[in-house]
Image (cartoon, rainbow, N blue to C red; front, side):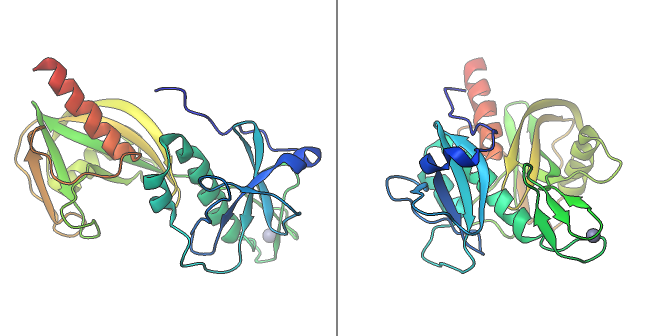
Length: 265
Ligand SMILES: [Zn+2]
């Protein structure tokens, strides 16, 4: 990891807002181009639907939720492909806060309107005081290998020619390691042995908290379910199919494994 600029999770104070910049997100999750570069714009007036996200490169950043659709604004995925890797955390945070804020306008318990908490990222019910925080849904994502071969699969919703690692939500009562074994068995019918943790990523489509693992297969037989997975195969590191975008943790799993094989060869 080199010198990533982190979003400092200190909510900007009102008196610092004259230096604030903002990121505008529309109803569909499109992000407006900024004035100077990337996605940050100058803040020239108080915004009605602004939420403090934190500090970015020394400047306070606000999210402004735009109550319209702007088909001309690039999607979050398109921005991730265009901007340097250090923009990931800013985009991920903005999209998830936007998604959460729009989906918790009313209390899930009593149905009354909610209000933004003054100091926290929380929506508070005006009636029963129930708090709703931004949700992260834990998922496992795993690269299964056999010797120097990688098991990659494709879902029917992937772009043509693209393959990726296996992933799935962790179910209630289940550990991440159990989910790795279960998902691999369900999706490709492969029994795995040793499982090793890699790292995590907060993925904003819409709010998956990805826990990434390397898993070693016990055998090479593949039996796909045909529903979630339409094709799966073993690939040599030199003959890989289309892969996920660079910022995705699935791609980092694949690149790290392939680099490891190259060192061993
Ligand atoms: Zn309530």
